[in-house]
Image (cartoon, rainbow, N blue to C red; front, side):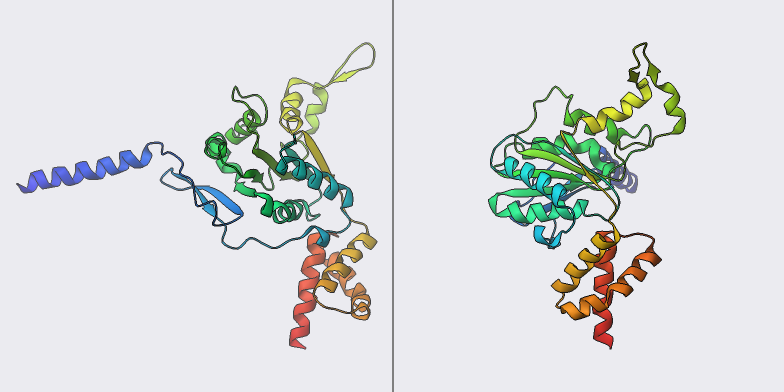
Length: 291
């Protein structure tokens, strides 16, 4: 074989490799016994992969304080789902650091022995959501598809993909899959003052939103259950601090003495939330190791 032919075949092989990488690939199932939580990621080659999470963060429902109403709603909906009853897709919205993601993780741990599994999907990968659902539709487990900190900018393709899967696709809903999403925005899209001008007033005083507003509301309305979270008061924040310090082994006297430091910590962070309380407790406990 001449040098020219060898170069030709080498270039042809490289071309075929690039073509194969650009073609759509069938999504393959992971080892579902490897974990209770999984992540979906799209690689640079275009291949989507579901990978088990090696170390799932521990969280139990009793550790989540000052969100009892929200806890009851999410727990009940998840229990209905796992036990074969009807249940809703859930949108958890509100103040940051108030326990939205932690509550979902706590429910995963609570119901994992009964076959509950979680697949985390990033906003950028929601275009593949239908493929993920088709892959797990015939599995015996129950799956929560989890979208954390979800929000969209105008025109993002994942918005319509999620909207179609929630309600609107010709495909029937899958009884072993629910979508749980958290967001700081109730309607998941940015809202502008100018949109208030599109509201229409009828003669009898009714108010109807314009088409642009209707489009923004339509996605959040397809979640059957809305659960709202609110900023904590000072006493609620200190209660959460006490709970975390108690879990770390501090006495009642030590916890009481830490109140002023906890308040200063929240003041410096500009927020009173469960996340800030947990971060303070970790810092407080860590400093005792050095003393």
